[in-house]
Length: 257
Image 1 (cartoon, rainbow, N blue to C red):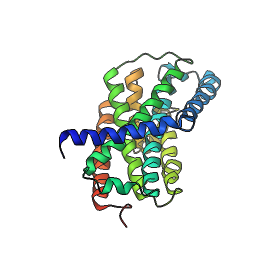
Image 2: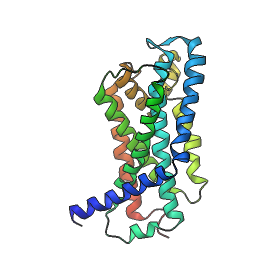
Image 3: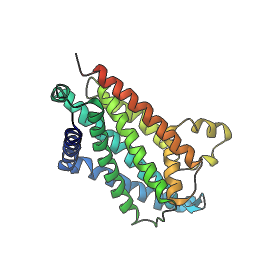
């Protein structure tokens, strides 16, 4: 295929994904905004006033970067896993399989669509947070890199989950039993410096810890881990998951029967 044809195929997939989640915005954009607003009110205002400062900032400021990242992670993942599995379920994925579009273009299109929703939700949550606290960007390149790479990573994760899923129940297992625990234990609501040394070591195994702290460093300038290590970890997992997803696509895992 020519470069123009590849670009057209990529844009077609991305635009279809964007139209899909914007068309049903009460289900895709509104719930995360409402949920995060409740987090701001309950954890930030009510509980935060009793906790006081954390990391040299008031508690609301400290948790906002983590809550933004949590919204980006869950939305990016949910968009791709639900969209691609629906294509499998409706058997419309066959149209892509018989087309001359290469696998990497298909993958890139779905990942970009997931990123569009994840970053859109992240922007909405950021704007909502300004009603509760002030945010001053400490390192803009770090903020942009971390949020873009994290959104891409979990879009890839959603794609792999969708390929392995055989029924609708399968697409909720990972978010419920993997993403949610890792997110809550990833330093969103606390600094791991508060934990005993053993649990600090255990926390370092959690990949979401690096993403939350990398983003927190970009906004507040404080982090429990080296921000460059955070970026390195995210890049490593992106390369790993992209290789797995492309391998599964080439073999038709979960698609060809």
